[in-house]
Image 1 (cartoon, rainbow over the protein chains, first blue to last red):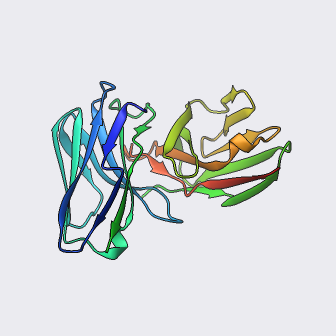
Image 2: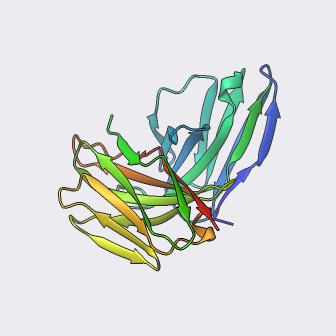
Length: 113
Length: 113
């Protein structure tokens, strides 16, 4: 275990479904992130939360909705997704500021059918 | 936004040989990080470089930050099958207060036994 736990590990959903991805970190970090990793593409930053406040929304479509109730938990709510949204969704955490490495979770492998 | 370019995209190495992967930026970087992602896994933080010309070693891995803080390299000696995976650099620009972490596309390493 990395200290960052993501559930579920795998998810298959239809385009009309609503689902949520969950991330929990036990490292005492105060920044959390959602990344999308598609085949043969760089890691794409989606959202950043610092001390529970969203500080970055990287032009992500509104069908992805993040929620950060506290510094240890992060959710990504999904609705009316498209097949091209199929990817590995990675949660990461770090200390705030520019000088710290990220700890990634194992990811959720999402398939939209 | 600030981008980091990694070369090569793929590296096929004979077991026991050395290789180097490079990370380049057009802007001056405040720091650079390296991550490794095993096949089917998630990125794992390896190291961070901060100072101009800095060199750090982890066993058979040598990380270097360029004098101008615009490039970095990862050199692996005596490659082993355990080195298989994708190596990402990730960097923050020191300009315009842009402290977002941008990931390169990665170098995917395969090893011939």
